[in-house]
Length: 122
Length: 112
Image (cartoon, rainbow over all chains, first blue to last red; front, side):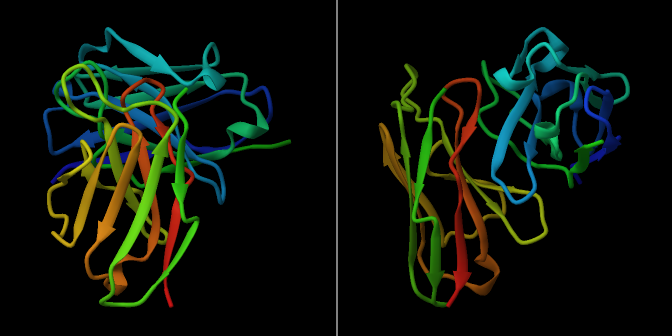
């Protein structure tokens, strides 16, 4: 069974840092695009970052560029999101989602993890 | 960035009746390879989103055949042939023609 389990969320002060992790199992992790998508409380979905197989290509939404960094460890089937200079507007549930095993971009997201809540507040 | 506009925002439905959701894109989602990069997701209450449809009309694994997708260019539609109680939730369209991937604002489907 394909599983994605996020961890690392919590309460952090504005300007602080947090590192999210996503543990993947049930599939050959190294073969797939991996992604982070967030959902602010009561709001819709926003893609945050994407990383291609092997980690050679990384993409970010403009609002997190230069503050967030996506990475992957294929040896441990893990995806990460390092979040620095956090702002109140970064408060959201952060989902890890698998992309396809092919292509020049992640053209679908399936499955999604259960999410981890990040709250940025003083 | 590509903007996706969904309608309606809210859709009261009757079990057994059909339902339809529209997604309109600010730019064509047609790639040079001939595919349109438009997906549909359902977020059931208290759950993570799940993929229903990808590349406009391909059902994801395990998705019932009462769900179907259609459209081209900038206009797309998700149809449910006969709504069931388990179909309630928020439906999102998503484009992957360009990065950043962007989502529509969502359509909340609830039982009358």
